[in-house]
Image (cartoon, rainbow, N blue to C red; front, side, top):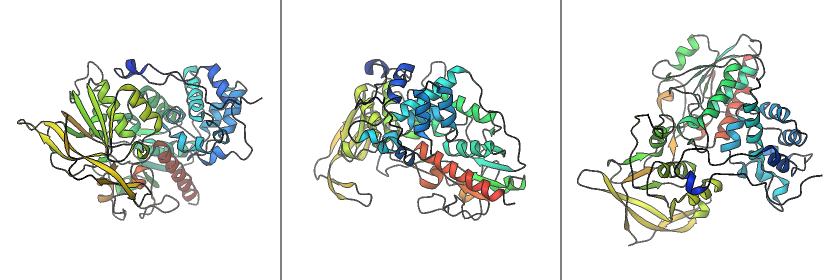
Length: 461
């Protein structure tokens, strides 16, 4: 009989006062008993509405049914038939806006905790030490993947399973993309990311790090080396700034730089000499997941006060509700309906305050959100010694400016057709390089779609 509880089985987590000062994972995961209890809430719907909300098409009811039967390894095999990074997705996917938003149980209560069950399944497999499927027989075709983030890794993994010789060219010294440099350890332990990558290597994926395509090699040179197709999954790592006075002051940086120093360069660990701003009062500008990650990291790095400054209201914040909730629990202070108009410095050109202007919500803008309108005469100073800008990113122009025939839109994103093919023959693209900054799972969905198109094209040769 299904468990008809209207609420999800709670997942244990660290005490907010304790976790706010360490980088250990906040949520602790389900025990087998908790997983069984939650899995039994699934009604195993025949029309599977939850699957329609998954960008990579995981057969969700099937893997959950395996869990109710006590077959965790079988559940893992079901998930990985569609998703090569289940331990990652179980932690960072916005399930509440995707698969769980389609769950029938959500009509009269909370949906099934699909993400929590995916995490449990992946973690149980990882801890078991069991091996994955053997490397497939080669099919004689070579494909290059530019970028070792979620989109590139997914494309590479799907092609490797089909027998392609795949090489991933990663610009940084470790593969993983935003999973390594952007998302903090307390949300996504890096050991888990690297284990997922090792699983892909076991399938035959070759990963070359410190390879900046467009500098060390061009796409033309890759094709001259025998690669029959190229997938560009280089992400959107170029930070945006506000263009206000004072952004060049000492103590002002992008969230990308701040998080990269802490995460990829291990600035949070003793024994590493990575320089990270030492702050007492931090203002984080923005309301998305990156802003939450930067704010929560600043607390853990020792800041006494951390403020989220967002020009719209709490209901309009694009960050996951769970991340907002965790940030509030940990002591991050939210200054909604505020917008910085100038950053003020001291005699040493170190930022000393943000000049904020209060806002109110007017008519909806093109996206459907109500536009923020300044309140005249409402300016005031907020004393801070660090300002982190987290208002979005765009694709780095290096690849498109060094490759003839690649078209981009006005935001610098590569133009692709329905098959993920760019305006250059044989060159495909997906993820943030095409959409601009989005979610991990949407990038993975694009990588999956591109792999399917590449396979279809090359099998005709």
